[in-house]
Amino acid sequence: MSSTTAGETRKVTIKAFRFNAETDYLPSYKSYTMEVGKDELILDLMNKIKWEHDGSFSYRRSCRHGICGACAIKVNGKAVLACKQNAIELLDMFNNDITLEPSSKKRAVKDMIIDKGDFWEKHAAVKPYVVADVDPHPEHETKQSIEEFNKFLDSDLCIQCGACHYSCPALEANEEFFGPAALNAAYRFTVDTRDTAGKERLELTAQPSQGVWDCVKCFECAEACPKEINPIEKITKLHNMQFEQGVAKSNVATRHAEGFLRGMSKHGFLDEADIVLYSEGYLGMYKHLTTAFKMMKAGKIHWQDGIPFIDNMPKIKNLDEVQKLIQISQTNKL
Amino acid sequence: MSEQLHYALFTGCTAKQSTPELLSSTLAVADKLGIKITILEEASCCGASHLQDFDEFLAHVLNARNICYAEKLGLTMITICNTCQLNSAMTKHALDSDPELKARVNEKLREVGLKYEGSSEIKHFLYAIIDDYGLENVKNRVTTPLSMFNIAPFYGCHNIRPSELHGASNGNENSYTPTSLDSLIDALEGNPVNYSHKNKCCGFHVELQANHTSEVLAGNAMVDAIDNNADLMVTPCPLCHLKMDTYQDSVGKVVGRDIELPVLHMPQMVALALGCSEEEIGLKFHVQKKAKMLFSEAQTA
Image 1 (cartoon, rainbow over the protein chains, first blue to last red):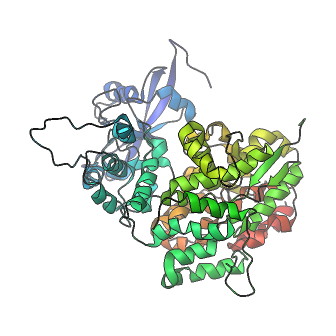
Image 2: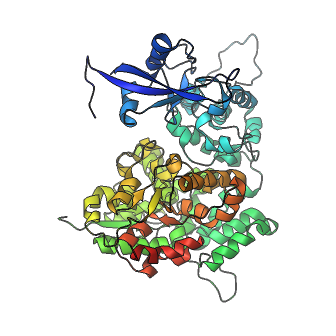
Image 3: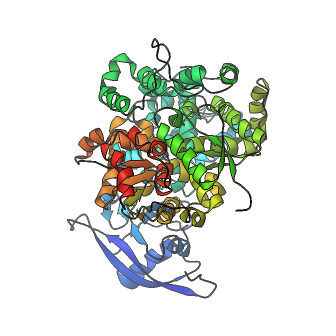
């Protein structure tokens, strides 16, 4: 692959998703050939399409320096902020074969422009602002220490571009899920010392189907965020805070998280059969009988101790260390 | 190779329970390649990202303890599960970059006579094979070329994301265009299948609490592989394996397709090409029935 140095350009043909919801039944892909310089951004490429090839090509753009979040699109499935993403870097990554697409094809209105209604609805639902009784005539400013401020500093950098939201596979499969951006916002205001609605947000984000427990742990959000916020890290913190503040109710998801300690205390390993039984409860086990039977037939299930004459659960060496460490380090309870 | 490679193996829970074939094929491959393995029999569960949701500090303490045992041996710790890899690496990163957290964790470890230093690297066996042993060397040892199989590489999230955390330990794999498994399939003379879900999520982690999501994600990946003419799928992660091998019937119902796709563990595929025994490869432990035929099919090539 030829590297591009100062003054040089690379001639490439890029493809773009074209669709007008008012007139088209199906989208199409069109090709545009252009010279790309080493400092050009994906936004420059979109400008070239519009200014030099087809004036009807539509996309959102505004600030041009990575702060308004309007120009988020996807290139070969990778979420990018068009005004921040170097074009040559992407051309190198994808072997000079790139396709510009909207962040969410199913929400396309015109070309790169999508209806972000679902994003804003979820964002609004978590109360993304400081809820506080404010004295209209305060005598002192509300002070925060550097440590308190640093707790939410990086989560506050979110520009609501939707890159993580539309990269989240959990949201694709379950439209109820808040998604990483709204959960990051929930975290940001919950840890703010001036805010008083933390418990309410924790209760909201603990709900099955919409809350943190539907995160599939794929880390797509961490990879997609152009501001390097790492939303899934904030989701993990919300999980922990739900236990710390007694918001977590006993259900299949919370028992599944806490239940790891049952097997680990007895064997050092997770007890694979016990965790399903403990999380689901005896009544919930009916769903798993077919699978359990198949796994048993293939020799995959190990019996927990407690069943007479059968105990083939493996145990780690120095199990007493793990037991002791759980005893002295555990901070949360269900 | 001038010096024999020697690693401390963190088996994780599944290799000791529901996927014994993962452990036996890993040891068989290491033996064929002349890689020395010391199993960390003291190592506990990594928390699988679920204990982390319950009590992140406790999870760091327990993962640090596992790493201590690799450090005691002065060896690189290798993992054979993407989720073990990620959670161990996350603890290592957290402790190595936060002296205050490291001190708090070591205060607990002191009670059991251990100390976390940060001296051992942690990498998945896949990258030990590729980056340390070398694909050319693997290629030279192939006795049963996999040329009759179209193999869909399924990378599994936790080996490739977040890419910043993995860094050099996964050979700086690009999470959008991963190549390691494809190159390994190539080296074993199999035909890598190109499909867009190769770097997507299998849904394993929400199997219990968000079953529909889990089934849809697994289904999308398997159907994509099948539609691109895959005979089988291979993954470095036993959790991806469990989701996709065990639940093909129910996943098929959710996505409205018949799914019959053998899903191999990465070391099983290597073992097949290096001529390891049927017992070591352990295809009898698969739920998906077609997998059981692969050993004899490979021999007839």
